[in-house]
Image (tube, rainbow, N blue to C red):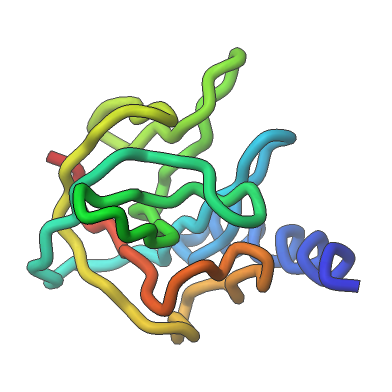
Length: 135
């Protein structure tokens, strides 16, 4: 039931992604949240290693060992060609196992207006790290 709901959500949200709405992108190995278009404005530092966490969802593991589900800037795509990670618009590719630093903020669930519903199986922490920019 959850998977069927998620598939339906991805189809509807995928259309919204073209106009700047938040959505979930998925490949066979991984899925991640892409945030709606935003002006940013959050000033927290997000730093750690890109990992695949619960529910095949991309997350960040901080140096303290905390794991946070990630929401990437609008326009982010999953890597193709046998690579697992993301291509952030105007920045670089970040692959699973890479360390990265980003600016953004942390948001409790539910994420709110413009964001897709987070799949239940991806929720492993109380807060989601929302990336506005990658350093």
